[in-house]
Image (cartoon, rainbow, N blue to C red; front, side, top):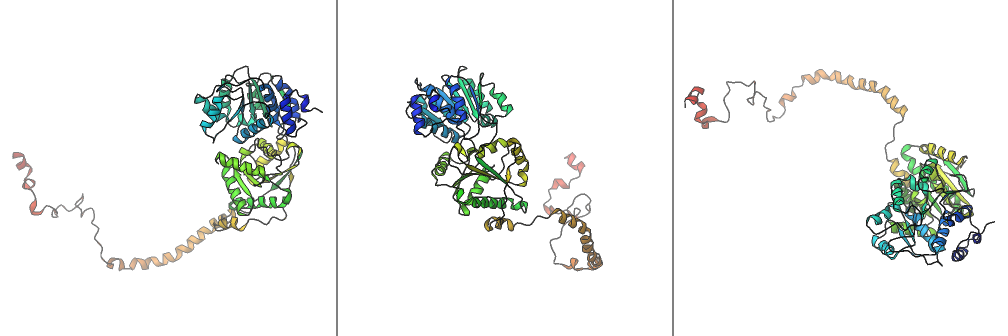
Length: 484
């Protein structure tokens, strides 16, 4: 069996690995590290939670141990799709480079530009960044990338699939052609792989598991859910989630609950807290400081349930997550693999449960097709329906008519109209003979068009408005006026 000591890593790096409690590299680490140390480009594909981050941090630290960075000219660059993943990579460098004198800078949104610029001005060996913030610093003239020797793209498929392609291409154009490039991801669709061929030069492909496969240590299940009424789907779905959490009992020490939309993240978090659960939301619209506090609380155990959008699905490394709940089935089946990969990490056991509503059926079929297996269906015999406070607002809403009731109403409509018209016909003569309308209190008379002197008025009627004050020239005939 291969050990870290067999991988030709720097002795100071090996000491840090030993103190971190690791002895044996994972398959992706054992396959990628030797080629990375040789300076070759690497395309690494492995399941989430198998140690891909260490696969590039360990050889990078060993390669950068010799040399020194110059101001504004980083020696290596790591690109990450999200702030959380970038922060996690930075933590890995702190752990494994504790005995090596290397400097690093973390360029992510939500942090002051000035603080980041001060670090860059001193010179950094390792620059970890999200694409947007990196380009912001470059456009400000604070960053030069011509000295980058090693470039890493973490979660490569996500970077290239989330609309980052123009930014990635521009960043690559700013780095030297002689750089070493490392791509790592849990999934690599064929169309994405064709794009990577433009960035990598004769890469060594390390694939330690079938693409888009979930770890065997994760027990998967799905609850097929149908709402009693469309307007009650949200509250009933949240009740199903609570039933699942209660069903797991003490075995659910902590969990990540994934929603597709940020607004649903906030709604689910608020609902769980209303029912007495220890839960907090995390998504891209929250301040970075709040996101950091929430993640720290989840890591130290003060927060039990983390309700998240897919911003937390990629690269969030909390080794002891016991459960993952998919409140929504993700729109992209590859995201399902990343979501459930937050549990069952580093050989631990984990459990992933998914709520499948009617609108999620097609997406769920795509997930099973990708995994090439059928996910076990879970029954909830003790499920009692919505909670009172969830159902109250919706109970007040008018009940929607079914198709059958509308059809019945259409057939009955002529009869109603006929019944409504019958008394009307009998009353018409009586209404016609009523003289009261003429005897009602007098109102100001409405003058007709003829009364107002318009066309059709009586030409013999007296002129109103001039009287004795009519100017003399108006009374003159046309011939008289012409003579005068």
